[in-house]
Length: 246
Image (cartoon, rainbow, N blue to C red):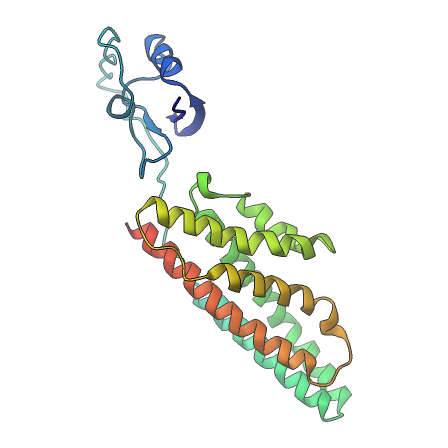
């Protein structure tokens, strides 16, 4: 038996069976024009187009001439601009590389001074990267989300728990975008799951063994982190913007 989701005053409700929908229309709780969705559909459509209704079901009452038309919140989002996050990520990475090189040269006082100068830019970088990740999750339709955008970002700031969450928030974002693309008949992302897992591993390494005093290790870790960031988010953002524009 098919299960249907209905938009009632702009809010998703359900799932409901055919019989339940007929009862709700008969009672006046919803009308034939309410949008609904069921598995296999690409977009939301009016109930009377999707559900087989008995001919005895009364038509919707005429709208009042003074009443405004029903409002449904738009499902599309503005295109995501990932360039600000990329710029800050590159600046912070460049400063980190420079600090590591100075430290490798044996001038610890100069590296500490540069680290203090880089701190405000690092904070701004974290803010812009977090906003980018939030916007990617917020652009996913709710039926393709594993979690909320706020949790997707916020849980990354919980000590120790974030080591687990890193393997959820990035891979599940890729999974959601892939499912969204398939529902639109588009090809899935080119293996972003692997890049998502690699980014999660680098995230954990950066906050654990990245602090170990191995000469050049943090430098190599930073280069890998920047490369995966660019590949992963370029693919995810490009795919989301294509879906939003359709």
